[in-house]
Length: 477
Image (tube, rainbow, N blue to C red):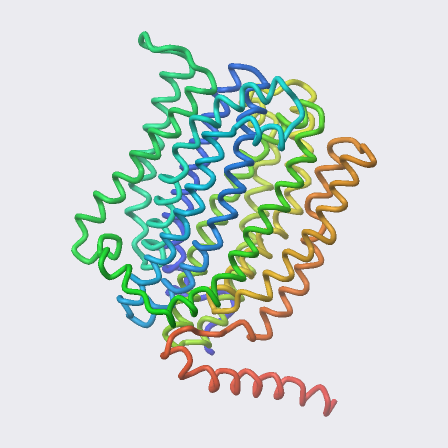
């Protein structure tokens, strides 16, 4: 390997070509959420808290279907590297079906039983009353949001990142316009408050999916519209898909359950803490937007190389991403810290909630940096074909360390809100060292393509030889 750990021009071209459009797309999604929250802040702190609680339920749905998204992207990227178009179509068909089943389940619960959902997440009746109205409407957008995610994941994995970006821009503008009209009742329309924000979410989701299909129809070589090829499954393929995807699905689903338990604890803190958490999640999304762009780039770059049998390049690039990602995350956090007061002030928070929010962002500058590094490494393990190690590590840390400590801090010991918040990141630091060790071992490279399998033994032999040659001078000394 003649490239340094800092990377060459080709490496950074891949980041800019894939990562920046995805980062910008996620930044648009976060901006839409921020606009929602700022507009709702004019309705009072309770509206902000209620919509924040509802977003926690949609986050659980995200965890339930995102396992299929990541599982699908593993196949998309590796088949893309191997130039296997039929494999890409089959993987997309399976991924799309499973994701839509999850979306329909959550949509049904949101529309038919929003009272139950709100009662699980918070014991504050005034927050529940606003949240029920919001969730009953926004639940209709869930299948559309999930379908858009499936299409976007396929396009990103095949290095077509501009189409989802264009659709997101128009969707954002639609969301902001509808929110403005219906939250405040402009131009003779009714002032619907939180319900108006929910309608805006549904309308923007319709626009997003419609534009994605329209842009796909204009592409002569689009996998999205090759419907017949998407359902040419074989039993062997489905077994292979599930063997690689089920650990990822289990990881995301159990992670979502763990976060739900943490959110239940947060939902039983004081109202200022709940509102502060809602605002914090939006600001966290600004940081996360850049990180998701890098994560998407890493999955495509590493997965494509592993699928094509270029394991040396994939191995080195995975280590580069593990260094670059936390560095960028920390820099963004440090840039936001001096302006965190005015930024949080946009959300209509009271004095206590504003105080909480400032300290939460300070804690996140450290914990969030470590968390994104762990996430990046786990994402690259999956792209390389190894979904188990990161899953076991993440879920064990969450349920053996973070969830019990957060629950005890918030429910049993009744500690102050900021102390409860700090316990949410306790497992990340232990995982960091274990994942760094596994990344350097190279054992996570397990291709699903014929091309990748053909060069695997040669890569492992080369890696073992390099390690042996490094140890021998030390032994001689």
